Length: 182
Figure: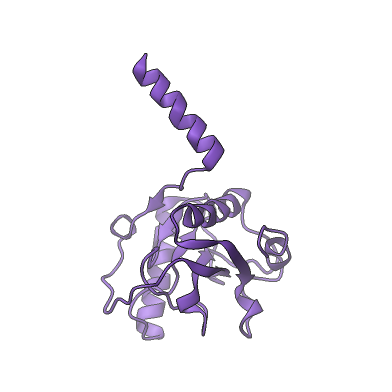
């Protein structure tokens, strides 16, 4: 009986306060080791939305491969110390740990120390991410607020709001403008 009451209590707490989504760890997706790590001072003011401008993915194996490709491009092609994004989101709604909550990213020039980069895997110029992916990003932002990593009065922006880019895609950009805190 106690176990049942405890389970019901957890469901109520999760329903009322929200729960952080499961995050596929760096070890689980096969990340390379970062060559340098800088810590992020939290809570931050911004949540930035990005897209990879590459292929979409809809299962863990394909998404993990896309995350590895992104990390290799950032480290080998851009000479970053690691993957640039804080978190990446696949079409199946799975969240992949990039630099995570505590490490300074390389996702939004001049704003990396002031925000997190949430990157959707795919190109969203003519279609939008799945509803599962969009919900996962919203849940991650809410999780960041809950954990004290993101300010409760945070500002949501698309990458293009602070830089000369089409990111997060012409089809997706109008959608994020309807999200809370935009």
